[in-house]
Length: 304
Image (cartoon, rainbow, N blue to C red):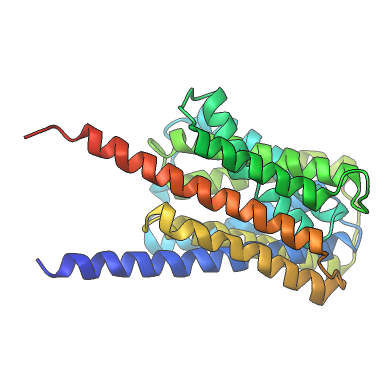
C-alpha cells in the first residue's frame, strides 16, 4: 500500500528528467540544423536528413523497450493527415531557423499552445473561458514585442514562417489528441519519420544538391538529436503533462545560449521580454487546461 506514492514520485521525477532531455535535444537539433544551413542546406534537405537519421534512433528504442509489432498502424489515413500537417510545420520551422536568430525562431515557435487554444475552440468546439482568451492575448503581445513590426531587423518572411509553423504545430497537437487513442506513440513517431523521408526524398532531385561533408554531418547529427528529442518527449508522458510542460521553456534558454555561443547572436531586450510573455501565456494556458480537466473528471464521477 505504501509503494504507490513512491511509484508515482518516480514517474514524476523520470518524466521531468525526460522533458529536460527533450528540451536539450530539440535545442541542439535547432542549433545543428541552423549550422547546416550555413553550409548551404535548404529546408527541404533539412527535413530529409532530419527524418532519415531519426529513424535509427526510433528503431533502437522500439527494439529495446517493445517490439516491431507496435509499429503497425491501426488507422493509416490518420497517420497520413498527421504527417502532412507535421511535415508542413517542420518545413516552416526549418525555414524560420534559416532566416531568424535561433532565440527568436524558438520563442515564436512556442506560440503553438496559443494557436492550439484557438483551434480547439474553432474545430473541436471546446469552451474557452476568459482566462484562456486573456492568455492568448498576452501571448500575441509577446510575439509583437519579439517581432517588433515596423522597427524590426527581423525579416518579415522569417517571422511569418515561424508563426505559420506554430499554427501547424498546434494543428498537429490537436490531431494527436485523437490519434493517440488508437495508435502506439512509437508508431506515430516512426511513420512520421518515414513520411518525411518519402516526401522530402521525392523533392530532393529538385531542391537537393551536393554539400560538404561537414554540412551533411551537421544535418545527420541534427536528425539524431531530433529523434532523441521525440523519444524523450514521449517518455516524459508517464508524468502529468501539467507537471512536465513548464520544463519545455528551458528550450528557449538553451536556444538563446546556442545562438550566443555559435552565431554571436546576443538576444535583445525585446526578445527576452517577448519570450517571457509567450512563456507566461503558455504556462498559464497549460495550468487552466489542467484545472479544467480536473473539474471534468470530478464531474464524471458518479455520486455514491
